[in-house]
Length: 496
Image (cartoon, rainbow, N blue to C red; front, top):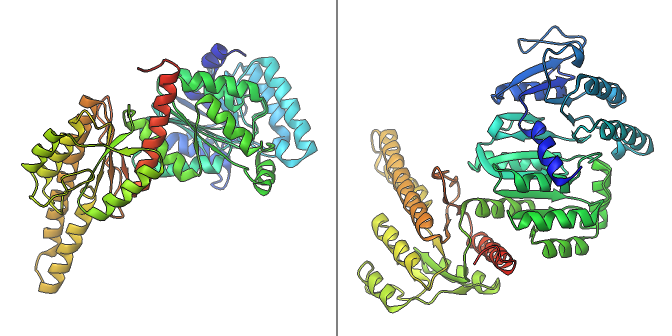
C-alpha cells in the first residue's frame, strides 16, 4: 500500500463507526472481557457488537454467535480468541467485509517456528484481502477523539494531541497511565505487536497526516525495512516532532525483545545514526520520552539558545545555569532596560543579573511581572521559572504545623480555605504565562521544587500551555531538544 492508501485505510482502525469484539466474554479474567468493558466504560462513540458462540448477553448487551450474524457493517473487529482459531475467525471477517482488524491474541512468531508459520498464513490472507491489521500479539489501540479504548487496561487519558506507536503493549499502557495521572492529553496509541502486516513506519506515515496528532512518540525494538523507515521518518519530522526510544540496546535486551514480539533488535549505534539523519529526537529512557513529548506538545520552539532563569532561591539558579551550559545553551544577557524595570519591583539587594534571584519575594504579582519583563526582552529566547509553582505545598504544611502547635480549632476549614486560595494563585500564574507564550511565541517552563505537584492542564482552546517539571535538568533537557529540532527545521527551510 502507498502512503496515501494507509491514510485512507487506517482511519477504520482509529475512527471506526462500529466495533465487534470477537471473543467477548463475561469471564472477568479474559481479554475479551477487558476490552469489551473498557470500550463501553470509555464511552465509545459508535456501535459495539460482542461476538461469542456461547454467550447470550455480555454486560447487558446482545451477543452474536459469529461475526456474520452482526447486522450492518463492521468497521473494526478486535479478535481475542485462541491463536489456533484466529485464521478461521479472520476468514469470517473477510467474508463479512470488515474494514480493519486488531489481533490481540498472542502465540504467533514470538513463540517459535510453529507460531511464525501461523503468523505468515494469517498475513498472506490479510494482505490478499487488502485489510489493515494491527498485531498480532498487541495490547490494542485507542483514539480519544472517538472515545475508542480497545486496550487491555482500564486507562482513559484525556483528549489531546500526542500519539504513541509502541512495540511493547505494557510500555504503552504505562505511558498512558502517566499521561492520565498528569492530565497530559493523548490522541492515539497503537501497540504494533508482531507487525505481521503494518509496521511502525506505516503508522508514522499515517500520523504525519493525522490532523489530531501534534507529536509522535515511538518505542521500537527493531526495524525490518530500514530504508522505508528512514524515508517515512524524514518526511514526518518535517511536519511533526517524533520522540523515539530504542529498546534492546544491549545483547540481553535484544534477546528479551525477540522473546515478546519476535522482533530482532537492531544495532543501537545504527539506530541513533538513523534518528539523527531523519530528525527524530532520541530519548534515553521512558521518563525522558514522556517529558520531551509534553514539551513539544505544549510549548513554542525556542528560536535561539539564550535562556532567562527566574528563581526564588539562588542555589537552584546556579544548578540550572550549570545544566544549561553543560548541555550547550547559554545564559541570556539582560539589557539595561530590563535591569531598570526589575529594579522597580525587587529589593535593592537582588542579583541584578541572570539568573534573576527574587530573594524569596513570594509575591505573585511581583513574580508574574518579573517573568513578563524577562520574556519580553529581545535578548531572551526562553525562560525557566523555579520555585513559585508548587510552593503552596509548603504553605499548607506550614499552616498545619502552626495549627498543631497552637491546638487551633476548625483546622479543616482553614486548611481547605488556604488550599483553594493557593491553588487559585497558581492557576492565575499559569494562565498569565500561557497568555505570554501565545503572544510572544517563546517557551516558559515551570519547575516545581516540591513533590506532589500535578500538571494543571490549563491548555487554552488553541495555542500553547504550561509545562511543569520536577527538576531544572528536565527543563533544560527539553529546551535543548526543542532548540535542536528548531535548527533541524530551519536547515530544511521549514521555519525562518
